[in-house]
Length: 394
Image (cartoon, rainbow, N blue to C red):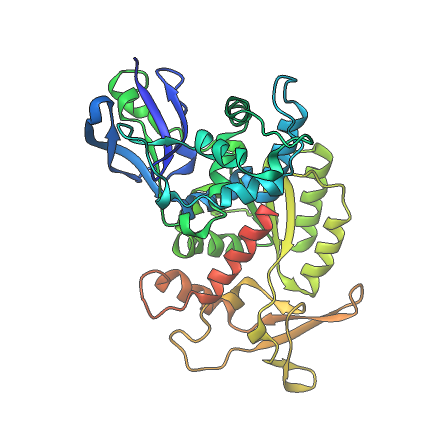
């Protein structure tokens, strides 16, 4: 029979492989995700063996960043339909209808045939589609079960896995990659089993200054460890090459000309200089793999203490003075009220530029205490990374 591996959600088998064609799904998991899981064999034999296990909610986050967000799944489905052989059924049904069928699947309610450990997702979904009027031809007849199975064989299994996540009831179910048999059969060695991510799957984060990159790099595993391994940061130890918005704009101009294919996220401050740089970079003919964004707006910065030529005031500093340090815990270890000082007028934007006073002190407190002292508040940093992840998916 050979050695079988499978990728399953609950008792639904999303895809499977055999022997050397086992299919490596390590990109969906972290290296430490190995734990005991039940394996199902003939004659109702069940054995607990090591497997990669992670909640579907977490896997969905990774799929979104790996190119399987819902908008991209729509494109993948469209490409599959365009290339489908003539022997397939009339597949003019919309992607929205496909989503409706898959989002109706509650993994907990799937009935597994007697004597089987899992049920093939493709067969289960095909039976649902046969009963759905959206998937009948103009004469009112449904395509055969075998025809729908052919379609699912041609669809990327990660697309089907992503669609299962549209049902919130499934998000706490385990995604399980059962690899033990191909490992034991010698089709892969233990050192090669966890292949991890391709370089093309990872995102390179580029910021205005070295401290910005350092803060983002330290914060990500604290606020969203599910996806931390998907991001790389430029080595900031010495001679950081992009300090200042001018250098960063020139860097982006060079990448635009090279048509670089690696995924790059450029993060700019939400201040006067950052917004000017944002406009200049957005005007470039950027490759699709390169995305530029500014730090998100914070409601609590709409009434922030400032100092300028006219003295002390309270102003909305969003878009004028928001650096990454304003997403740190400004109250940790200090009773002093944080404040911004206006430093200069930007003629191109017709607005003043501001800077957080003593921002180095806030950064030092972050590096020394975040993740170590429960009293350190990471709420704003969690909001920042949520924004950046959304921008990556977009």
